[in-house]
Length: 85
Image (cartoon, rainbow, N blue to C red):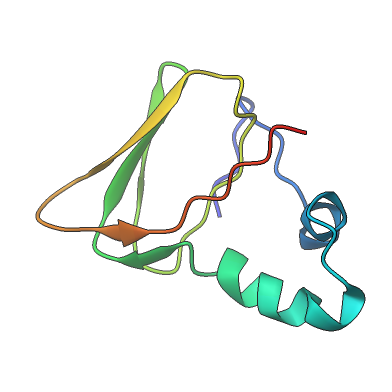
């Protein structure tokens, strides 16, 4: 997981609370959070910084910061969860 001053990482418990996920389902949430990049490599731009993520990586950031994602090479599969709360 990337940690950078441009965003504040959230703990799985905080995300679960925001998404109203019951305690018994939180292990499943953690599995998802641990593998947001499913296949390939993606570039993530947050503000004026760009990071490269590979399979098994994840990143959390404030969605109000301008951002974007793209496949670094070929095809990439990744999961995006957006919560404006």
